[in-house]
Amino acid sequence: MDWDDFKFFSAVVGSGTVRGAAKALGVHPSTVTRRLEHLETRLGVKLFNRRGQSLALTTAGESAAEGLRRIEGDLAGIELLLQRSQGELAGRVRVAVPGFLLLGGLVADLDSFVSVYGEIQIEWMGAGSPAAPFDVALELTTAPALDLIGREIGAVGWSLYGHRDLIDRSGSTFRWIEAGGLSCSKTSALAIGKLRSSHLDASPIAARCQGFTHLLPLLRAGAGVSALPCLLGDADAELRRLPGAGVEREPLWLLRAPESRGTRRVQVFVDYLQAAVQANAARIRGG
Image (cartoon, rainbow, N blue to C red; front, side, top):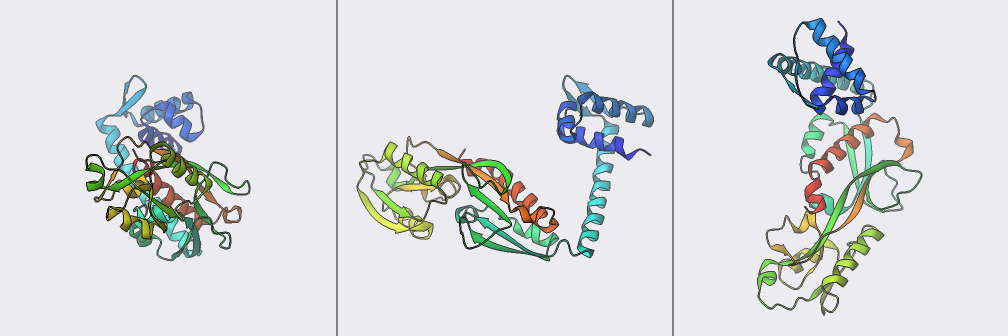
């Protein structure tokens, strides 16, 4: 049995198109087509119905896909068992993440990771802490350090928020709450500054505070308006966006230290963190 053919079949099932499967596998689309035809001929069944550029599974194809998912799950379990036996999935992973992402529920399903990788200890730290080297980081930046490994995986949106009664009150004069310690990066500071200058440049300052721990209660109390990551502001039932306020976005990078390359426990957490960002992408971007 040629298992390699099923690799091509699985890639097509995942992407829905020959071109998408070819891109995922790093081969030419004609190679994918040829391997699918070989598989269908060998099995004597039709696995896909062709609809333009897309492929739809036949009844036989659905059965094959379901069986393949079970096999892939079994293989993943075997791989996990072997890695644990070698100690590759035990030990510390140091993770630097902006605090508001955790407050906004980015890792609300962390228990699912812990249930599988219970021997990995996650050491959380604030983003941008120079005294604390990390293995993995989510960083708000347009120019990550050249010695780090990573890529841009999304964008963080900021907007202006106040208590819903304050926002809805006709003829309200909005006052600004000056909050320090919100900016995780220069790009965050620029986003906050642009939002204020565009909408509240002449507004008097109602209060000054430090960090989200102080700012959120002041906003909920109706003390004024301020900038928040949309991940926090949109999820808070007490708060509402300032009418007409847009969203300022900054790039979000997933980075890892070069010395962690090839460390399996780090890689599995990188995969988890990337999936968490993708699952919450719209909330993080602010729509």
